[in-house]
Image (cartoon, rainbow, N blue to C red; front, side, top):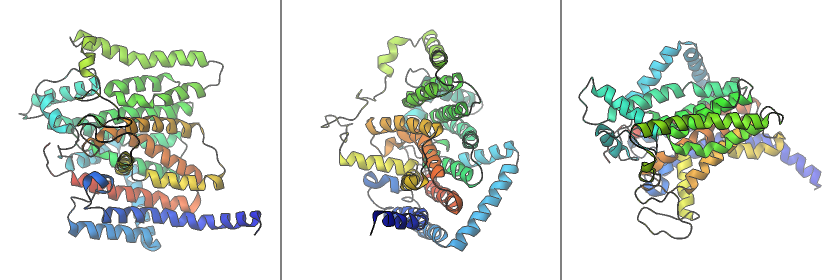
Amino acid sequence: MPRFARGVRTSARDPQLLRLWIVGAPVALFIAHLVLARARLTEAYGFANFRRVPREIRHPLLGTAILIALVPSLRRACMHSVEAWGTRLTGTRRSARIALAVALFVGFRCQNFYLGDSADLVRNIASGYWLTWREPIAIAIQAGAYRLLASFFELESAEWSFVLTSTAAGSAYVFLPGRMARSLGLDGAARRLFVGAMLTCGAMQIFFGYAEVYALASLALVLFLASGLATLRGRHGVAAPACLLGFAGCVHPLTWFAGPSLAYLVWSVGGSGKRVRRIAIATCAFMLPIALVAAWLTLAGHGPSQLPTDKLGGADGRCFLPLLRTELETERTTLFSLRHARDVLNEVMLISPLALPLLATAFFRSRAAQSRPDRASRFLAIATLGLFLFAFAFNPDLGPVRDWDLFATLAFPLTAFAAYTFIQRVKGDDLTTAAFLYPFTSAVLSAAWIFSNTTRLNG
C-alpha cells in the first residue's frame, strides 16, 4: 500500500482511537486502584488511595465509577447534573463558596500524623519554634496562628493552627484556577476541564488541615503561576510575578525551582527593546521580599550565622539522591535505579492522577493537531520541569511514602500544563467528554485518598 494511503487510513482511525483512549484511560485507572488497593504500600503507594476504604464501599464505588465512564447515557446524565450544579455554585456569592470550601477542608481534615514531619511540627510549634531560615514565612505564620488560637483556647499541640492555615490557603486557592483559565482564554468545556483538573488533583490533600507548611508554599507558587499567565496576557508587568516568586521562596525554598519559568517570562514578554530594563525590574522585585525577610530574621536574633543549622537536607545534611550507591540509612535508592523510577511514577499518580493520561493524549494528538506550544504552554512547561527535577533528584529522608508531601507542590504546575496541553490538541465532543470524565476520575481517586487520611494516626 502506498505511504500516502497508509497515512490517510491512520488519520481516519485517529478519532476512534482518541475516543477509546479518553474513555479507556479513566477505566484503566479505576481498575488499577481496585487491583492494587492491597499491594505493598512502598511498591504502589500511588495506587493505594482506596487502601483504607472498607471493601464494602470500595468495590461498589469503583464499579459505579467504571459504569459511568463506560455507559454513554449514564455518563451524559451525570455530566448534565454536574454542569447544572456547577452553574448554580458559580452563581452563588463568593462568601458562600468560601464557606463551602472551609466546611469541606475542616470536615475532612487530615489526622494522619504519620505523614511527613507532621508529628514533630505540631509539637515544635507549640514549644516556641518560630524562627528559621529554611521556610521562614511559613513557620512564622504557623507560630502566629498557634499563638492566636492559644489566646482563646487551651491547646495541647499546634494541630489546629495547621488546620486554620491550610484551610485559609485552600480557601484562597480554589479561586485561582478560574483566574488562570481566564488568562489562558478558556471557556466552556475547556474551562471546565482545566478548573476541574486543578481542583481535584491529589495534592489538594494538603489543604485539608494538613500539618505541614506545603499548603502555604503551594498557594504562593500558584499565585506566581497565575500572575505569570496574567503577565503573558498583558495585564501587568514582570514585577508582580517576580516579587511573588521571591516571596514564595521565603515561604519554602523548593518553589524557587520554578525560577527558570520567571526567566522565560522576563525574556519573552514585551519584545527585545526593553529587555535589560525588565531584567533589572524583575531582579529588584524578586530580591525585595528576600531582603526584607533576611532583615527581619537578623533583627529577631536569628542571623546569617544560623544558616548552616537551618539548611535543607534533613538530619544527614544531604539534599540529593546518590548517583551510584547508598551510604546512609536515609538513602534508600540511587538516582537512576528502577526502584526510584517506580517511586517517581507513584508520586505523580498520587498527586496528579490526570497528568499522565492528559499528556499521553496530547502527544498522541500532536501530529494531527499541527499546533505549536504558545508562550503560556512554555511557561507552564518550564515551571513543571524545574519542580520535577527537584522531585526527581531530592532525597526524601523519611522515604517516598511518608515524604510524599515534599513533592506535592509539583502537582499544580504539572496539572495546569497537562490540562492546557490537552485542551490545545483536543476539540469538539471529545473535549466535552473529557471535561467531565477526567475531573470526575480525579475527584473519585482524590476523595478516597483524602477520606483515608481522616482516621487518626500518630507519627
